[in-house]
Amino acid sequence: MKTNVNLQPYNSFGFNTVAKYFIEIDDIQQLEESIRSDIFKNERHLILSGGNNVLFQNEFFDGLVVFINTKGIETLREDGNEIVVRAQAGENWTDFVRFTVERGWHGLENLAHIPGKVGAAPVQNIGAYGMELKDSFLQCEAIEISTGEKRIFTKNECCFGYRESVFKNELKGQYIITSVDFLLHKQTELKLDYGNIKSYLEQNGIASPTLLQLHDAICAIRDAKLPDVKQIGSAGSFFKNPVISAEQFETLKLAYPDIPHYDEPSGKVKVPAGWLIEQAGWKGWRDEHVGVYEKQALVLVHFGGGSGKEIVELAKKIQQSVFDKFGISIVPEVNYI
Ligand code: EPU
Image (tube, rainbow, N blue to C red):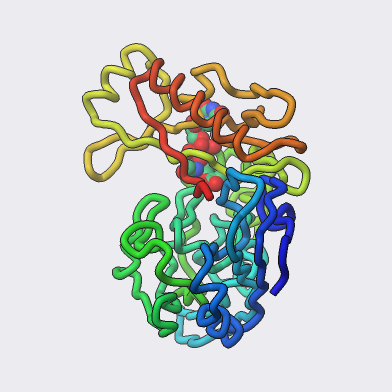
């Protein structure tokens, strides 16, 4: 256990928040001991994984940060076309996806290069390029904080939705995910339909991509649009894409015939928040420390020297101006701490 630790390397926005207490967890036993400790019981606590989806609003975190860094990948079952693979929560997501792709296992390739760790992936059901974590999720193991008991969560029990799960809602703050099992396949069709995947492959002379070529293409497409957090602080998409009624969409379409959209199975329509923010004039906006990424308006960025409060203020202004222009409320997908 350490005291007064600067969390700057542990949050992808790169804010200089100091934690009163900080412990790094390398194995499950250490985690079990830690949640039984007096400090854990008496202080405010935060379970921190990759820190890619958090916004520290204050300069001091008055409590204990538990940083999950457990490692390990094992194949649990290999059966005909199916593979079940388990990854410990602290495994780096990008490295894990690459590991599966290199072995020819399908299921996670479109989720390549998403910053973060395995244990956080189910919490917000990470998604990109036409794929979501839930598509390959089998089950996860978690520890209940109040009792220290282990529990398996099946896919159904996780109640996955768009950037949602039971861990963000009913069970928020109650469990710590320790490992995730994925059901992958040796052969299956590649998902090439989202956005500019096909055009990118064509431009690069790839007619029918291999699994690895698709993985590499996704990495390149992401790199072109999203900032490298080693250089510019961000938490990826800051807001969720709003889902509006078909009637509201039809009205919007009269004014903006080219508005991009995705029809939802419910009959509602999902509209890209990045487009709304760009139309409201924010794309590329910046002041001294924070701004809106010039290549993707859904990403708020920290250029250095700023504070979480500046992002909070910027987010409020963007929400208000999108609401004033379109009558649509956009909500953050990032967790405010
Ligand atoms: N758009 C604009 N201006 C912008 C950004 C986007 O007009 O500044 C338009 C694009 O032209 C396109 C549409 O909005 O027509 C969608 O854009 P994009 O494909 O970049 O995806 P997104 O909806 O903005 C989502 C995820 C990303 C994920 C991409 C790719 C959410 C909140 N975000 O973004 O996830 O990488 O799709 O699948 O659903 C993340 O969650 O951190 C994240 C990066």
